[in-house]
Image 1 (cartoon, protein in one colour):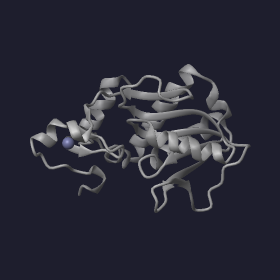
Image 2 (image 1 turned 90 degrees about the vertical axis):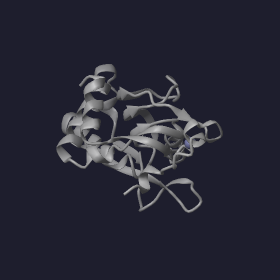
Image 3 (image 1 turned 45 degrees about the vertical axis):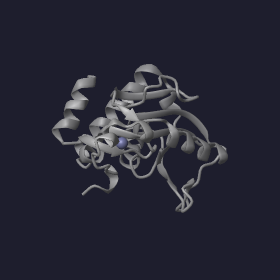
Length: 201
Ligand SMILES: [Zn+2]
């Protein structure tokens, strides 16, 4: 799928919102990608996971060694699960999909009895990567458990940086969206109400 057709798909499902948004990174933005609106349809989630897998397969053979997908909750869970299914189907090996979440102190952590060991070759899968902050926190969680991170993948890369990770990074589409630090946000200056997209009804 070409860059434009994925974005067209997002527009078709109203998953590309326009307004004044507070991102989880703390930055403000004039657009927001609500991947859940596309991923709510299992056939689309499956198709998108396959496209992301093909991006990886085109450029690397690391997928043959992956036995664990780790995603940050909530955004990464559905695409992570679908990605594990694709890898399992194509590579024929057993792949688990687990997720990290934040504890009461905001610390990224592994809960629910999920385990990572030194036998795990990990791909970190997300819906959207913006600053890479949460991705790097997931990397820390995996490495503290002695898991081996092989690569990172997201449906959409909306960052400005090209090389922000110490591991190979794969994505389907790159989307340039304006991010603003709060002190210097033109939308704040226009008094446009700030919306936290996850809480939007
Ligand atoms: Zn603002």
